[in-house]
Image (cartoon, rainbow, N blue to C red; front, side):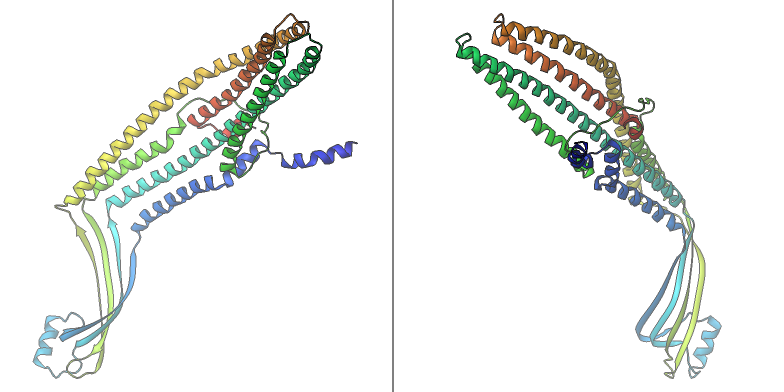
Length: 424
């Protein structure tokens, strides 16, 4: 017999899930992968900025055709005089068709804005990492909150089943009384209507459960058949508003952007150089010749008037102010929410205790009411009210428990607590 029970229960055990499993599925899901891509983009952007400090080396090859003989390389004055005096001198470095191959390089020696832009890129990278963490916490909070609501709906459904069972027993007893003429037929209609209302409520619960299951499936890829057991392992750690971290880092990046735009008006120093090997036919005797030429130098660039850069500075300052206002706004919102949720927690705990006591009292009253109803000392309407009171009291208890979980999760996101350590 035990073996048969184990075999029957095996499919359900295989389908069972846990909160850690849902969290792991969330991390592997596309919802989280997209945030990882944002972090990688920020990392590449940071590397792209610092890479500007490295030398740039290019190979090149050119072909030019001229209408008059043109120098293949710059000719020193003393050499040029000799060529003019003796035009028959073989293989003069002038040609109608010139081929060139070579290499050139440039390297910033001092460009202040590059270093500041690198700091901005690092700040944006930290912002992306913080945003990824907050998004993960928000999705974990959604999983816990949705699961808590599933608990609530399942418990409510169980209490409705108990009420339905009680009413069905009452209905059997009442049918006998109606048949014997000891109770009016209208009493049966009232019981039937109450049973019908239970069916409507249970149907609504199924619809709500489907929505919650779909919410969890959308971010984990796991479709739950029932709620998952969960317990609170660690208490909430209130402190800094950790949810502000992404905007705080973004504000730092905006400040670096303003500085970088201003620094683009500073003098910049860039080293450069090139080497070229020219090929062609001398214009005076059509013989193949080749000449090589190279240069290396330093360029100092001092902006004197750059209207577009002044506009860029103004734009960056406006964006910095906008980010600052957004941060202040979010801080005010989170502070207000945190105060509200923290005030709610002890009230919810009290509601849970009061609801538990209320259920005990209402269940006792229901027992008495059922006895009085069977003995004819209580009307059908009054008896049904006692049945409804028990279900309503249980609903308030389950709802308060679910609301407490949701409140804890909201605070965990605001304070950036590790939800995986809080819930098991």
